Length: 497
Image (cartoon, rainbow, N blue to C red):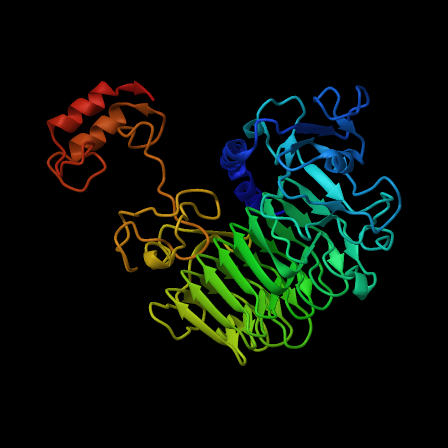
């Protein structure tokens, strides 16, 4: 995992845990049970009633799920779990309506908000025999790690790493789809703070396949999944899908490197990042493939350095209707290099693009083509530098209602006093892309002008040399003049900071 992207993932831990705790305890009935799971425990009753008696071993999570009913929560300690303790590839962890499954515990916590799913990784793997060696020994892995078919939005999966699912089986049983998770037949589960990595399939949706269903993913990461023909991360057919603050990195498939929307699907991406995804076949879109009357909405997201062998490295819309606003499309490649067509291509579909940065330009209100000036594009740090044209240049009215944070979980609307607003709406104006430029913290010691850790004679000399001037750092009270008030402030701060 890229270290900088890991920082992004880590920054969401405390906020996400508190939100999850409040939402669950506000709605759970008084008689709801908490079932405890700890794969590393070797003592106790193994009945899940307390941490000391938690369900044990790689099959502990499966045992807790079997015992749970609507209203229950399952708290899972760090460790590795499997869908089954047998070698059966057709046994999966099945989400249940009204049951919340929460990873990221050390074991011993008394509150949901105390968990930390980065510090205490909780892993579900489809590698049943523990013999995976790259891609050499996958044919004995679970077809899916999780199944959410028929589960309502109250079925919650939160705080797990899901890896090693390999769906290479029979099409009629959907065993060739959704290595990480399969959601069909009216399911609508909620998935938060999960990392899907290294899942594969032969048909579509290396991380997940969704058909005639719905799902919501928040704060998730999809990395290095392989989707066979359709959708390295997701293949969606007749779906309502919502992705908020999600990251798609290095996923691969023939037609859609990251996500495919097919069959009148309605898909929304907000505060999302797509980078390094690749479509390797014909008619491909490196990040997104949109077709068959699907409607895709992209808001406040960044599509950077995705690639396609043919058509568009960024987005290809073959017969759908899509909208992009407050987004950045940059350095996506395909035939001809980093052209405008390789950022967004309509090939039978329509895409309305407004208030976006699109390399090579794209027609639409408020669109620009200037370098977004990321902090470090090569390291996939797509946060904005102080001079980025994306700052304060978006359209406030297009930000979804209720959106208050960016991809880092930090405030979404920040007014930069050093930037002239070029977007639309009342200040603060939203930035373009997945990240809002945050203001640097005020100096701990404002009178330490040379930043040597002390207010001393050198700082006094700086102030005296600026006496009576305007616009100087020595104007400590920002009244427009360096004067006696500023001198008094400096003397009051004299000494070590």
